[in-house]
Length: 144
Image 1: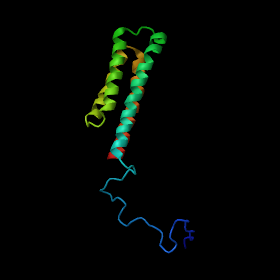
Image 2 (image 1 turned 30 degrees about the vertical axis):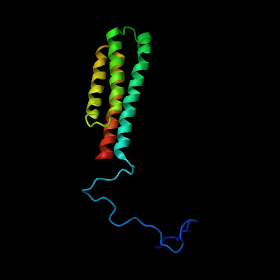
Image 3 (image 1 turned 90 degrees about the vertical axis):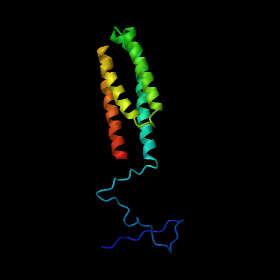
Image 4 (image 1 turned 90 degrees about the horizontal axis):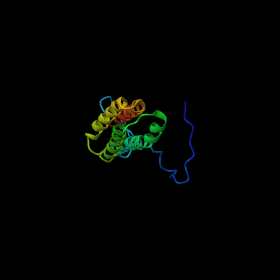
């Protein structure tokens, strides 16, 4: 079976053979697969920072609706929510540090513990723990 001839593009040199993938460029069984990103570390850091920034924003914006709809949200719970939001923003800025990913995981656990202060914080903790777990999964797949 023969392959159909393709027409050369206007900018291609018709006398030159078409470019083919270099031999040996495909990863073997022992080598990690390339992600196709120019800077995979930077992309993964951006994912982590974006996740933590979104979490901080949601936490801060959730204070008033929780107080109005959810009832008793005391000063300690509000302080805890603000502290968690500040910690999320600080960690978002520190994603270049290798320990920041572990600290982000601890932050998710602290938000889940915030469920002891108010049930809605447990709900937010579950949602953001799942999002953070997905970010960790993407990090592991991209960086190996």
